[in-house]
Image 1 (cartoon, rainbow, N blue to C red):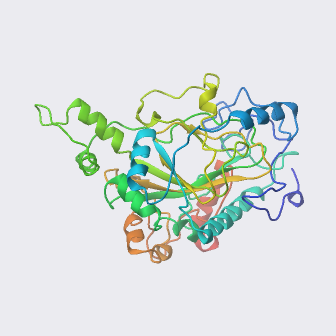
Image 2: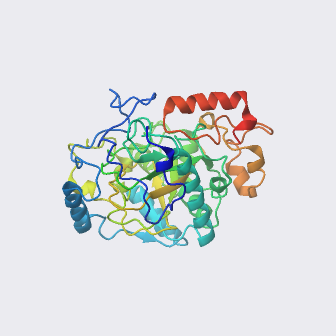
Image 3: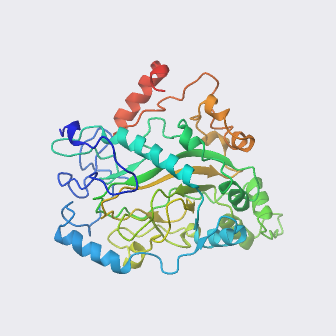
Length: 402
């Protein structure tokens, strides 16, 4: 195993650092729940057949890819809104399945989120890699990529005061009320993702959720509140066109990813495929994905901006060929009609009590009982079996995990 002395004790989440570019981690290597490499089932670790062969900053194939991205990466004419452009934000969001909004975080909030990301990543990177590897790859993900949510033994970061403080911001709450059609939406969770320099592979295109194509009464009510003219058929049900519009306009889940650094052509900007939130087709495989989709990234979005995403939309991470970590912490929200049974109680009561009245309202179903520390909260590990063990241990000794 690599020595912890080789790992940086401090680093920036948005400036150049020595983190990443581990030549000893094979390209496209993923691990299973126990940490064994190259499992039969890969889930989010789908290999990229077009990736460079070596994880080396100045490798010839890396340089070739870097030059290609410098020339072509990014959506041309990317729409970016101001926080008070509510109608424009809603129009682009419902059209494309995502929208970029400027300055959702002020300078103090941005610094706070950056510090939180550093703290959580330090927990992950402090774990020794196997053999000569610098880092442990997260179960069923490509190397140098981590989910801040799934790396937590509680599966969320709502126990962290930094993430909890971002659920109800003056900039985001009016936008969410516009997109959901009311203030009755709820918080689902919080986490985010990040990629280290040297994440040379493209992550496969995917959707985070699948629309189950059901239309309960609450979904119809939401659609009407959003301006959908629902017409009924002879049986008193919404007609076919109305059903399509209802499903298009009422995503069950919306996530806001907050940018810790400017998204450049080089540092692994997220790619989003416009309009795919309303398709029932599967995304193309890495072998089939056309080049325009690989280049459909949000280059031009700035630190402090937010990417508001319909989780049905096809998206994926892209290569980080820079020297800087790319982090996008998030908060996840659900529509009023989504079943409350899906909520996990991962926010401690003492944190919930410090929220605004609206924050308390939208977090009421993810709040733990008074005096109960959520199992696994505070523990981070890339390997799934170790997270499970840490969660079990925290149930036995909850006071040790705070």
